[in-house]
Length: 384
Picture 1: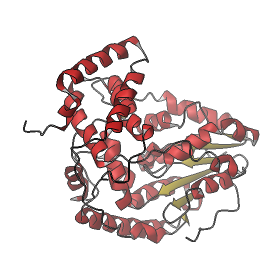
Picture 2 (picture 1 turned 60 degrees about the horizontal axis):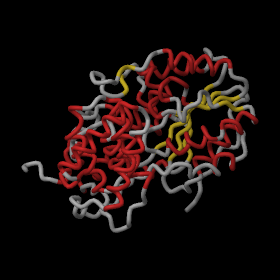
Picture 3 (picture 1 turned 45 degrees about the vertical axis):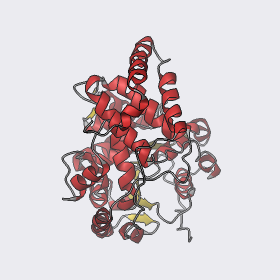
């Protein structure tokens, strides 16, 4: 594996490094490292604003779109979150680094607004970083991410929706705002200038490469971030784990508020299964059909052509985004969930129920229903 070069020049001493994603490209890992290193970064005159792991609220506020189910406990993020981030950035001494993959969904006008506000109308230079992976590899994890928002559509049906006519989707319209990579680069290059945008291709590179690049941009020792790159795994779900979420969503979505869904399903069951266990190698993974991998390759080829035309800086092998991903084995029996996965999911719900009295009451109702129906009820055929 040949390691691509890393830029040798950090951003200016008063510069802003704005990482706009895209989704499912190791963003959670770099954000966890940056958040954990806040104090160390400050010691090198680098600020990572706020107290949360990432600046998602500010990004969603800029986009003006809802977080969660808008009519059931969700809502549009208040504009104050972005304005507060901009104020903190303008006032911060030294370099500032900001990261949220939701920024990649910004329109050309919103991208320009972000660059202007965070760069203090040109007083602070802004360097935009976009991390990319092959679209064919992103399909399973992208579908699973939408499952965590309550989607009840099967993987095959979702693939048909997003790939039958690439560029549009009725089920998940944000997918193409995120993963038409050529368009993402064009929008942000238009806002910040192609000379101020760097694409990092995360194919055929060591896991620590992205952390090294960020450290170099920020002018800090690489080990400040590489030593923290294992703080989160964020692995993909197995086929059976994902099927549990599909069927659970069908059972509970109509009767739950968004806040309860986040507590028990998103953070409880989904996160609990992913972070609470390591699947056996024999457990079937999601199968992406050949036709979908072919379509993803065509999308990648078109995106790479567009990216080259923009003239932005590219670190890594851009052609890796045009590769046709190897076919995956057909999945096995998804009607079997390993006992340890079921135990982990239930344990996570129990832990979540300790957060507040309302949560405990809801957990009790869920437990009684599960006791009545049995966990096997999640695996009954839809016709039963």
